[in-house]
Image (cartoon, rainbow, N blue to C red; front, side, top):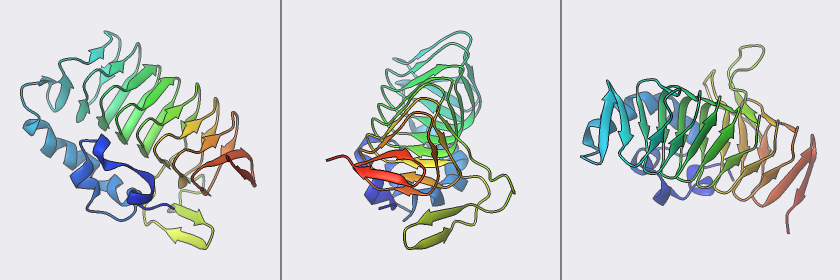
Length: 218
């Protein structure tokens, strides 16, 4: 329930070939920067390199107060709104929203992803049509600074990495002010209740209500 093929339809990202090289999505985090640097120059005339290693599709709308750090790619028809802060190593797909006062760092956003209000997304991959409600964030470093473990039903999966936020499958909905703790994996079509503090693996087609309370959607 937490492999790349379990979580994502790779038809909806420029990172499809890159992601196919891995089994688990968090394995891709270390190479996002180098992948973007290699992909950017190949994008063609529909993209403009607006500053060094920053490629923006000609149909995208980037508000004047937004900051685009290198390297990053902003896809077709995407909006990067007022005071958004793209720190770098960010691949943002088509028809996305990076909203007011949001921060992105070392991420892949599939097409139609929305991070519209006061979101922090770091060291994470957000699937097709996933949505983060206002104030929802990924916490990407453990408080004890140890390596992140994915707490799966059959036991902990050692990732070997220190910075790992969340893997959201396609069509995931995160409620307002929810916190996704390091190593969180949320399966496709699942919902996270507002103000939830999420840790571990949430199966697909589920509703995460409170700590330890997960119910089937159907």
